[in-house]
Image: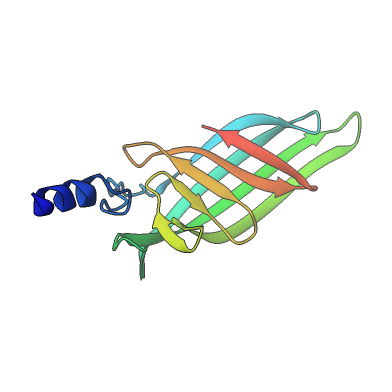
Length: 141
């Protein structure tokens, strides 16, 4: 009887189950869309050119990945003489710090500069966010 109660406690304990991931791989490629930045119609381009194993695991043993992402913003308003120009190439990864543990996330990536990227279940790019002029600019594809 003691063993049954102990077994039920272990199974229902929040620490018994590992953080499960689907293992969704990011697809390489590029997308562009039009957005408004500071009242200027701007082209937002995102290109994922490399997907590599980070060679690290999260607290639950899931492998983390890093991706090389190039994000560009280009726009002009000639009448008001406002120009939007941003271009950055950075490595992003999906290994997040949660409390005192780390966890791999299937659909979310981040860079040290504050940029983020989201993918869908097929590995396709859904959105990306960058910091431009102290504001977060989000491109939804």
